[in-house]
Structures are given as C-alpha cells and as structure tokens.
Length: 382
Figure 1 (cartoon, helix red, strand yellow):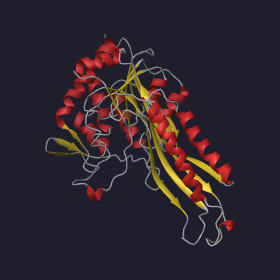
Figure 2 (figure 1 turned 90 degrees about the vertical axis):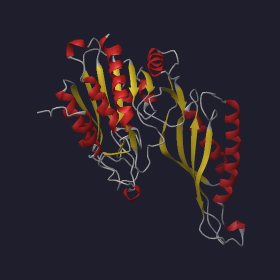
Figure 3 (figure 1 turned 180 degrees about the horizontal axis):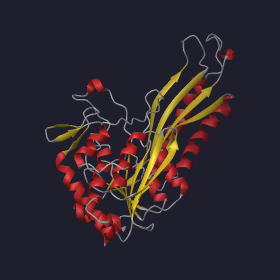
Figure 4 (figure 1 turned 180 degrees about the vertical axis):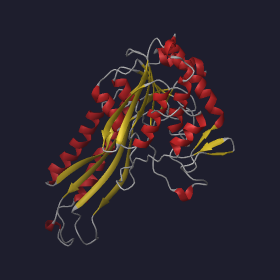
C-alpha cells in the first residue's frame, strides 16, 4: 500500500536521509532506488499514476502523472547528489538541520527539496480540476552521465508541452546554458634513451604540437561565436590536466591531456568533438605515432528556449525577473529534444551546490511552493 504523503519538511528530511550519491568512481557510486521508492509511494498516495523506469543496474527514473493527454506541465528534478567530505561539514550531511534560517543537508539545495515541493504544490488540486496532465519526473545520475534524462529523450515519448526543472537559480528563470564536452586525448609514441632521439618517438613533443593547434582553434571559436546573454560571452576551452613520461632521461612514450570545452547554444557538440579529434589525428599522422580518445563526459548539449515562449514569459512575469543564461549544464536540453518549452528555475543558489554545509534558505520554501501552484493552475487547470 502507498504511504500517506507526509508534510513538506518530513518529505525533505526523508529524501536527504536516503543517500543517493552518483559518482564516476564505482566504489562511491550508489543506487537511487530507495529515493525513487519514497517518491513513488507519496505520489501514488496523492493520486498519481506511477511508472518506475530502469535506467541501469540500481538506477531508476520515476514518471508520475495525474490527468490525461500529453500537452500539460512537467516538474522535474534529479534524485542523485554529488559525493561529499563529511569532515568538512558542521552537521551530518544526511540529516536535514535548521541553522540560521537555512536548511542544511546533502541535496537540500541541489536538488531533492524541489521534488518534495512539487509534490506539496500538487496537493492543492483535486483530480477534477485537471484539464491537462501534471507530470512529476525524478531522474537518475544527473551529476555524472545524465543517463536518466538521456533515456527519456532517446525513448522520444512526449511527456508534456511545458517543463520546469528545479535546479537552484534563486527562483530566477534560466532559458539558456552552455554545452559541455570533456575529453581525454592520449598520444602513444615509443620510449628510448634520451641520449639518442632516434631510439624513440616522443609523445610529449606531439602533445606540444597538438596544444599549439588547439589554442589556435580556441581563438577561432572565440572570435566567431558570441552571446552577450552569458557572463562569459564566448566559448571556453580549458586545458585541465596533462601527464606524460616518467623520467628526464627517457623519451616520453605516452602523454595524456584532459580538456573541458563549454560551448554556446547554436554550436554543434558532435562537430566540435570531431574537429578536436581531427586536429590530434593530424599531429599523430605527421609524427608517426598513435592517438586515442576517451569521452570523459558523453557531452551535454547547450540549452536554448525562446525568450518569447509562453512558459518563459509567464515565469518572467510572476518572478519579476528577466530570464538568464548560465554556464552550468542541466537536463534541460534533453527535455527540449522531446518538444517541451523548458525553463530551469528553482530555490537556492548554485553557489551552494556541491559545497560543504549545502543549504536551502528557508525564506524560499513557501515562495517556491506558491510558484509551483501557480504553474499547475495555469498550465494544467485553466
């Protein structure tokens, strides 16, 4: 039997007390199934039809809907959190603790609390009020692979016409964000004694050539593409990690670099990745060595929703804020791929996400619930 829907603070507390860390390091990665089951019980008790969707081993999405049709409102959030170092926290990360008018806990801001608020907001409406469906979606692994949202997009099933993703934006609507590529490039040459260059083929020198080409490519991107809506108005390309060789008297046999490319809406993610790989392949060919690539992140597309979309205009009006563009990635482009008008908007600040003593300001809780009730009324009940 479904569990009766608790009050809002109890829902937030139970979600935070249920660990669901996602991490690229397997020993730290956790299942999110217990969080999904909590949400499913509460939503079923509130009259929602429940679909628990397996994403991978131990990882699940939840699609909960009330009402019929495919052109209603989606309220979406992810169920996972990043890892944390408990020694840096003033309180237990897995307990919701009130301190200085803030609710502290891992996921309080990013972003388990939003899912509880979405459920709370839905309780105001009776089934006969719904003219269009409300769908509450909880996804898996947003903090790592975004596999949950990718699966929804790959399935291609329409889930709603409008979507609000409750990432922390201080209740300011966000309609654009940059896309992200993270890539490993590994040159493999041959080692040998440093006294005679003919005894080896330096992967480190190949990397030097590649970096020169990559910096020219970065200059070309930054001169060609601009979007003044962003604080950093151009694409960025960061050379974040490099390692090669093992000793000064040995020719470097292998050299690896990790890069991070943040690109603007309208730029093609696959074309960018292919261009970078072709630059590396050209260097490898010229120097008669090999190169291999690993996508450290499958890639997050850039997100763009039209400023004059109905959802954006409504949220700008009720929040009294112009919509913004941000540099961090979200699941929004995958919902846009499903034909949704998608806006990212939720309580808390991105500056608190992924930080020790993560918190949600208490004075944003009721405004968020009120905002969500207004959304449901306008897009599902009017």
